[in-house]
Image 1 (spheres, rainbow, N blue to C red):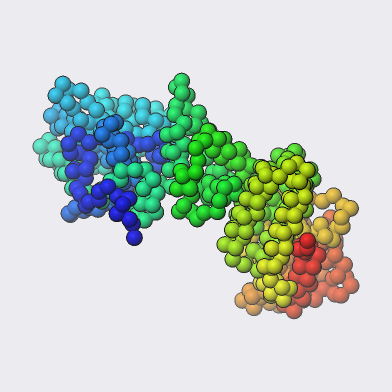
Image 2: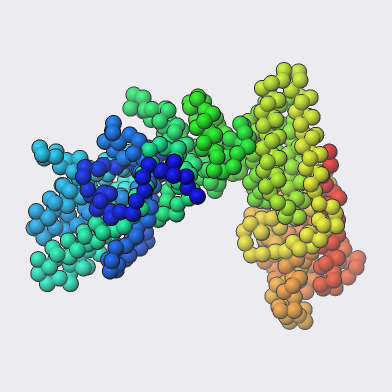
Length: 583
C-alpha cells in the first residue's frame, strides 16, 4: 500500500482541469531524461485518442508542488513525455487553424492551451521542457511564428519532436480531407481539441521530492521515466548549481551515464553497487533514501560516482591494454573477461572495492580474482545456485576492504587484507556444492544457438586448451577466429545412418563439441569422424590434438555413449583441475 503521507493530493481529473485550467505552469526538472517518444508511441496515442467514443484514460501523472508558491511552476515527476506530446498536438491544431485562415481559433489554442496570456498580452508557456530541448521547442512548437517543418533538427531529441509533429500534422490533415467545407474542417479541429480536453488522468500531487521514488515504484503509468538515477541526478543538481554558465554537474553526470550505458548495464544497478560496496547494504528501494540521508558532500559523491563508473566500464568492456597499471594484468584481464561471459553481475560489487583501492591493498589480488572466477563458474554457471547470497556476501567483504584501507596503518593493511581474502575464500567454499552435484549439472551443459551460449562454450574450451597446453605455453584464444564444431553433426549426412530426431537429445552436449579454426570448420562439414580427422590434424589447438590422438588409439566410433563418456571426463577435469577452488 502507498502511504497517504507521501501524497499531497490525488484525484481522477479531466486533462482540461489539470493542464489547461487557471494559470498552471509546469516544468521538466534538470534530472529528467530527454524526450524519447518515437513514431510508434505517437501513433498509439493518436489511435487511442481519435477512436475513443468517451473519455480515454491516459494514466497517472505525478507533480511536485513544493516550489509552486515561490517559482510559479509545478515540477513534472512523471508524465513529461505525454505532456510534451500533447503540446505538440496542440501546435498542430493551431497551425491547421492558421492554414484555414481561422486566426481566432489559432489564437485561442496558442493563448490558452500552449501559453497563458495576461491582460497585457504577455505570454508564458504552460510547459517548460528540459534544457536540452528548450530553445528548439520554444522556437518551433510553442511560438506563434513557429515553422517546424522548415527547421533542421540538430540533435536526436529535436528530430523526435520534428517527427512527432509531422506525424500528427499528416494525421490531422487526413481527417480534414474528408471534410467538405471550411466550417466542417474547423469543427473537426475543435472535435480533436475537445477529445484532448476530455482525456482522464490520475493527478497525483506531492509536496516533497523524496516521495517521488516510492510513488513511482507503486504506479504503472504510460510513459514512465522516473528511476533512482533520475532522482539522484536531481538531488545532485540541486546541491551543485550551475556556475558561470557552466553546468559541471550535468557534464559529469552525462559522462557517468555514458560510461554505464556503454557496458549494457542499467544505471540504477550501478548506483546501488557503488553504494553497497562503499557504505552500507540496502535494497533497491532504499538506495535513494540512504544517499539523501547520509550524503553532505555532493561534489565528493559526484566525483566518486564518476571514478567508479570508469572502473565499472573498464571491468565490463575494457581491453587488455586498459589494465597495464595492474601487476599480472594479463591474468586479471582473463578473469574479468570470464566474468563478462558468465554474466554474473554481483561480482562487480566486490571488484569495485578491490580495484578502487588497488594501490592501498598492499597485496596482489590476482590470486583472489582467479579464485572468484573458478568459484563463479562452479557455483553460478554450472550449479546455478542462488545469487542473493553472493550479493550480500560480496557487499560485506567490499565494506570490510573499505574499512581496512582507512582504519589500519600502512604496516597493518597487508595482513588485514590477506586475512579478509582468506576468510572470503573459506566463506565461499562452504557454500559450494559437492562433486556429485557439480558433475550432474555439468552433464547438462549443451550448445544453444545464441551468442551468450556460444561465448560460454568457447570460454570453457579455451580453459581446457590452456590446461592441455601446460603452464609454460603463452596462450590466449582469439574467440572471433574459432568456431564450435559438432563432432557428430547437427544435420548428419546419410553415411552416419542417423536422423536428426534420433540424435536431438545429445548432439548439442558439450561432450560432442570442440573448438577449431573457422577455415577447418568450413571444410569438415557433416562428414564422418574418420573423414574429418585429416582436417582436425591441421589444428594448432592442443585440445583438438588430444582428441585426434584418442580417435587414432581407440577408433572413430562416435555415438551417444561416447559423447556422455567424454562429457563426464571433462566434468572431472573441470572440477578437480581447471576450476578447482582452494584456499
